[in-house]
Length: 103
Image (cartoon, rainbow, N blue to C red):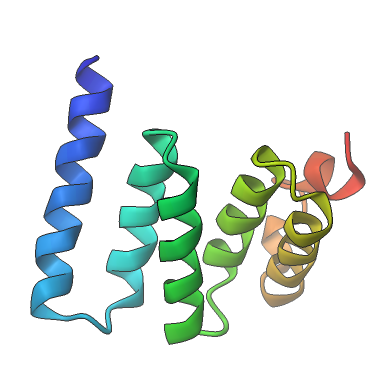
């Protein structure tokens, strides 16, 4: 329960930050992570997508969105995002190997 409150507070804090700077891809990314931890996958995907639209080379946003897409049953889209993430940042290959291969 405490973790849920912390993630809800984090999402609210990033929302305030985005009111000040609505073009901050990092704030969208971390708010998406908070939404993911709250199991609000639709909002997480939306914020990861905005982060990517603001910074098309944001490898970690592609990776996290890909993982959430896989959680929601969107295998092809999720694996596509993961492949893009690994292309942008080769160091992510090991972290997401199992998801890339479907294991």
